[in-house]
Image 1 (tube, rainbow, N blue to C red):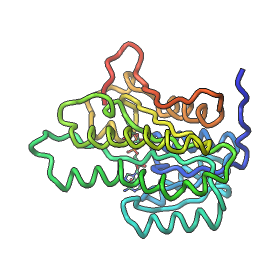
Image 2 (tube, rainbow, N blue to C red; image 1 turned 180 degrees about the vertical axis):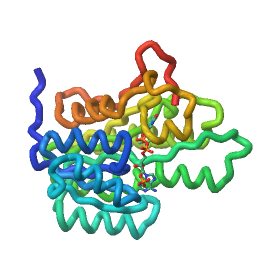
Image 3 (tube, rainbow, N blue to C red; image 1 turned 60 degrees about the vertical axis):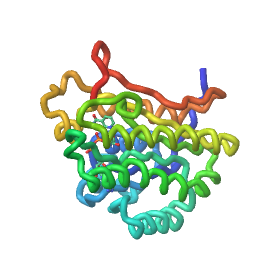
Image 4 (tube, helix red, strand yellow; image 1 turned 120 degrees about the horizontal axis):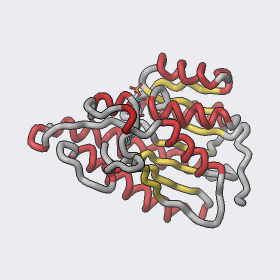
Length: 243
Ligand SMILES: NC(=O)c1ccc[n+]([C@@H]2O[C@H](COP(=O)([O-])OP(=O)(O)OC[C@H]3O[C@@H](n4cnc5c(N)ncnc54)[C@H](OP(=O)(O)O)[C@@H]3O)[C@@H](O)[C@H]2O)c1
């Protein structure tokens, strides 16, 4: 039996915490007594997440666009000032795009890479010094099955998640000596607002629930045996993986 780390008062920064998988992870980590910095563009959605934790005073609501350098500076300034360190970074915010290859504009490609790859890269880079002060430092990047396979009409999205996987693998090796665990969770279709936009034809019963992804994130943060888990793919039982 592995020891379970007590997460009471440990600090996590979660991007995209106002909806879907990010909100489910926030609620699950709040259950463990963690203090959370909730990041996303909509203050209203973040405040709703904070309220749902039942401990809104332990939550930092940080409305920010993670593609904007000034907003990133603000996040780091507040993290350093209020949290004075960090135990867990969850790079969850993301955008998907379902568009035929020839109709995918350069601006679409740039936008998706900025949210799904560049922002996690910058957040990892800027939080490493804070994570090094923790006794359970963990980074969890939310990937997708499209990080491993190709799906028609999703070239830009697939490129961004493949890139995130490459970064995750390289960083995991680079900081393992510092005791920092870097993982990627790669779900298939999850029942969130995003799937409604990209694959509205899929019925909710066939989808993974955000809480299932959150449970795995909590497990990875709480259990630190000798084995390093580099990636987990979540497929719906009995179904082909899809996004
Ligand atoms: N749903 C699926 O089937 C599925 C499958 C595999 C992987 N994923 C991945 O899971 C992650 C979460 O997605 P979800 O399914 O939970 O969808 P979602 O509910 O649409 O969540 C995406 C979140 O990202 C935030 N976000 C987007 N752009 C941002 C920006 N520029 N700055 C700050 N925050 C931003 C959004 O908040 P604001 O709009 O308030 O900014 C939103 O809370 C994504 O990385 C996605 O690629 C989803």
